[in-house]
Length: 339
Image 1 (cartoon, rainbow, N blue to C red):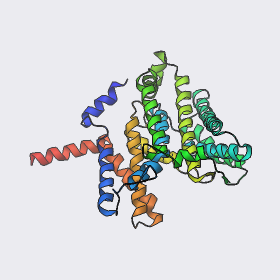
Image 2 (cartoon, rainbow, N blue to C red):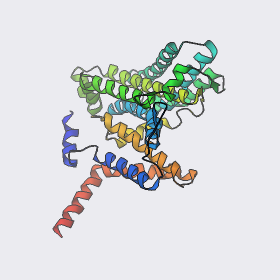
Image 3 (cartoon, helix red, strand yellow):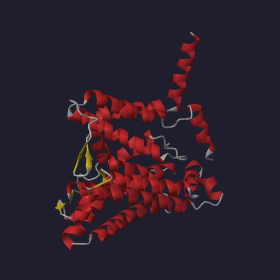
Image 4 (tube, helix red, strand yellow):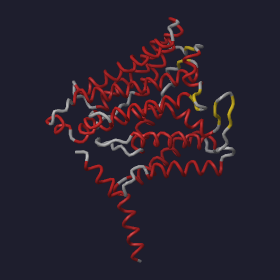
């Protein structure tokens, strides 16, 4: 079941990340030429500063969401609730600190537990009640921000906690600590997916669920797991978001995160039809989105054109990755060579 995507990759040239990496390289090259001091890096107080570091730092939540979304999409599902889960996680963390003066370790644990429960809810609706993923997760997407506002009583809760503030404001090995969180999360996910049978089970469910069930795969567990894992990734992104502003803003936290997560995953080469997934590709896709956002903000593009420019670039990358477009390019190249 996992051989078919590999055959397609060989037909495309065997480099599934070629176009995403090319798009990222072009964006970086454009900024290096037209954005002043884009490649400049400075060290202050033991931390690197510069536009490249800002892209990594601000793109950390998108990368975390993309890691979780990759596993969900590989089972032929989708999670539209990650933005709401980010808001809920931020609300839980701020409420625990402000209202109960909870120790930081317990704040992190309870926040991630709340995010995991959100994922379990989505997984249960999909796996046990057989509700379509887009509908099941839409329920929490709609209700999630209301839940977050109930937790914060409709107010923006602000706090000061050195440990929680370190998540987004601290540094390790000269890089923002949020980048370290992404690297550790990616490494643990890769080990779990490739050094155990779980990755194969996930891909088999996405490629052919009835066949996977007949082969003995517990498809119910697999579905609940991927949505729970995606919820935890969104919870970590929520901790970064709440740490970044030292407060919980239920209206704006995680806004459009679900769209960025889906786009990053698809740009990275994971098909919405399920099956084989590419974790590193999703990270590259998230970097493309954040680099594009930084490029637009640093240029003279009017703010109301931002989403249009963003969508055009994303569409171009997706078209270049499509089988039909690449077949057309090969035919044109063949005709050109013959002429």
